[in-house]
Image 1 (tube, rainbow, N blue to C red):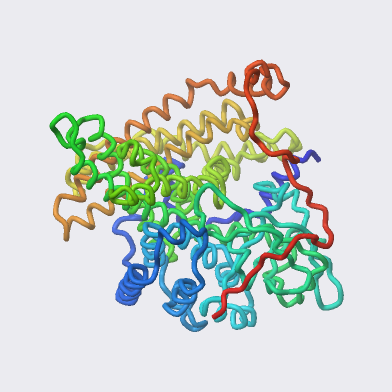
Image 2 (cartoon, rainbow, N blue to C red):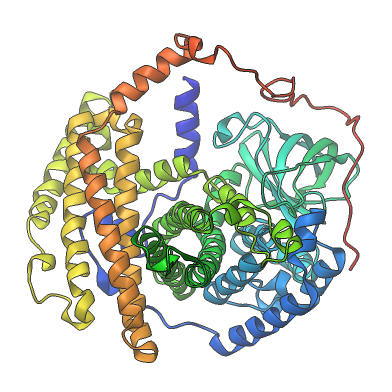
Length: 623
């Protein structure tokens, strides 16, 4: 078996294969626009308690947190961490019976949005602790004993970290090198983990390691003998986060700390991220709303050629994009959070779409903010303040936002993950037809199944509610956009079917095609969320939300049209061929006349197990 086939097999074994609950996203890619699954949206749970916490959090941030200090010193002060713990921020989504606040995803997301708009590093600390650290996997897969032992500690402020990535392992867990070997009543862990978010200050770790039955997950005490945090990583942004390189040398972990079963680790990680991924788009939405505020204020205050710059069309276009997109991003996060809290839908696609869309569009938003600010957008807040101007940290937010397209699944990996789920219904009935290794009898049975499925499904893609002029009339001026979503959903489903028919087993390698398919689906989901949110907001805010949703949908429709055009007219084949040539060194003449400032060293550091020779930089935040 090739390395690619082995990695694919590991990923397939880890993904959820059943769809026991309805999914708006899944049906969208099948050409079935199930507006009833998201409209009216589920009510917000625990609203009173959530709003009280948000008010307390705002007061704490305003009075006790200095964003400039954190950026300057590249560290969140211990007293801030302790203060947040006392406030309950480390237990926002931990159930009350384990000492947490028991907030739903909606208010948890709103809290992270608020924190991220003020101190993105602090939002990353809280998010990593709760969304991918110890609390989330234990809530989903832990025993009652494990929950009682660890969740109250997490809620009280014991910082948790998640350790999957290794120096030579990113999105390919089939190559995971860290091992966990049974020894009496313990497991013995050996290996090296990279970019352990919160790892430098963590009290508890979730560690993914290879056992005889596959990748497994463990809760590990960070002060266990044999664990060394060899160094703290430094990044272009999020300078306050305390990520490190962590080495395990004969680290003994009680067998009782195994989460779930042996071999279930990757499934635990992926399932954790199904809802855990909602925290990242929430932070992006907070940054986008901040960008909308700054763009509005600056565009109204700055004058050029006798007019406010916001009145000039070139800037007005960017201001409109920032404002409308910020509204839509918030709508996507809110809708996904409400679906997650209701628990009646399978939101694995919606959460992944939210992560992908918010990180990509959030980056565009803050990039446009820097452009509107001009030279001041490139200047640091400290420098601006030193010469007497408002210290707007636009360049910092740009740096801080950039990682979101990489964190918790890069955009490229998210495209592939969502695409796999989007074609799942097709593979379930016709997978063996496009599998060259399938036996003749299996292919014959698959042909019969596929014939019945497509005979029923294909006619549904011909016409739908989007073709009726009066459909979705209750949405008023936004009804036309929902009719567009319905029509385009069917067109997208037809395109997916045509792609499968054309490329068959080779479709999984057509990553450009699949990426555009997913991007179209993301735009349709965002349009739906914006219209649903505007319809609800109109009761309190009048026509203003509809105006934002309308412009956003008009912008999104142009992006969708471009993506459809590039499904079949693109340079994908040329790009692959040129890249192959580049890898052979064919174009090294381009590199003549330059000097490379990179420091010497291997592209990937050694992951050999053994005793650390580095200083241990781990430090505990006293509670």
